[in-house]
Length: 287
Ligand SMILES: Nc1ncnc2c1ncn2[C@@H]1O[C@H](COP(=O)(O)OP(=O)(O)O)[C@@H](O)[C@H]1O
Ligand SMILES: Cc1ncc(COP(=O)(O)O)c(C=O)c1O
Image (cartoon, rainbow, N blue to C red):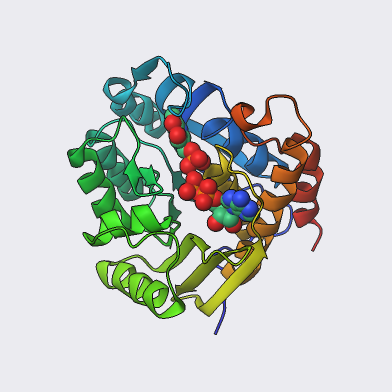
């Protein structure tokens, strides 16, 4: 049985706490979540987990960790009665930020919990991620209604060796089972590449039966595609799509944005360009 994870009433505008870093250059994180979810008719309320001059794949970057301000920032929300329909977290700056996200879950117990456990890719942990932060993120994964790891992140959460990008269906299913046994309600396992020109995402959960998306694998990689995937998936969920439709929408949307990006100068450094396609996100509002 496949059911929607969010039911939107009429013209209601859902409010999403987006707990990610803000990156000045090299589109990712809040720079993706705010426009994409706004185009889906959501009210995005940013909770910045850090300020970056650019994402950390560039050879030089400046980072400001915002952990110290977050408790006061969120307490002030309590003081003015902010209500939240979904809590969407991604790149974090420190293990204490996981405790802060848990406190947001306590304040808004009915909000949908979406955890993109951004920490690593291609078998390598991102430079700002300490073992303590990875462990804390693995703990947060257990609280997710929707968890969207790549294979490296899934391996860290499960405490197993990274199996490489070429995993067979049985292995992918075992990894999803393991993540669900740890507590995640629905899992989207991303980026399976069997060297056959196709990129696959595997999905299974309480709200959705096992299925796989298949898209052409474009012969280049761009930064921010993980954030664009999770944000466009959530855009579809918040317009009432079930997780199978939402995953298909996000997989297709990322491919379209990657194709547009390839026409831009210096495209492999600038991050994924999705701006001309925001109308496709808005079209989710038409049932
Ligand atoms: N080269 C590509 N060709 C087609 N789709 C892609 C490509 N790279 C990423 N995607 C799509 O975007 C999703 C997330 O991208 P990815 O960069 O693998 O996430 P992450 O940054 O979390 O590792 C993939 O699972 C896939 O659906
Ligand atoms: C600061 C920052 N935020 C977010 C990300 C996530 O990027 P992606 O969407 O490619 O996983 C990265 C990855 O390098 C990063 O450095």
